[in-house]
Image (cartoon, rainbow, N blue to C red):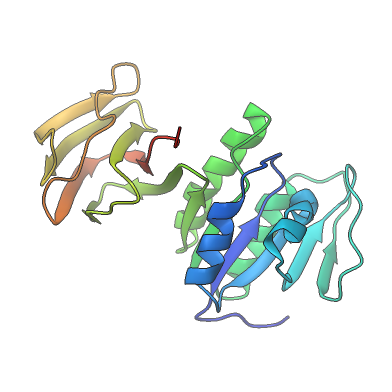
Length: 218
């Protein structure tokens, strides 16, 4: 198996997204990233003028294109999704930083399954982010992080995965918090804004998604 130790990976999933300019911008900013297509994620390649390093999939609902690159052929009857298998492969090869794009449109079951991959990656010591035209999402567990002020993303939100997040503190933001509890049913940590050079988010106990987002241009 080829070793990708110390490299970053971008997995193109198969959601029916028409707007992929954000992926082109990402590839321009990360010229050394390993590009992996998960099954029908290959259909985005023509728009991106991009050559993949690896294609993974069972191709039960699409046709694998005739591209000269490494392929891993899966069987349709399996426990994991094509995108999850692609993530497992890049982690096994040594990647510790992974982005997944073209993963949020279309079916809700696919969306939720793809979001959960961030937690799976964290459990394996890998940082994984979901990226689309308006959002960047990542997973945290009882941690303290800093978010730099970024004109590309006006807002940030904290989405509890456990029923209650305990000891949530936010500084450097429009809506600060101090040692608060936030529940899934009454979450109020939505659409905050970084006002200092960095916002600091501390969660004493609980798992959550952090989402950085922007409004869609009109």
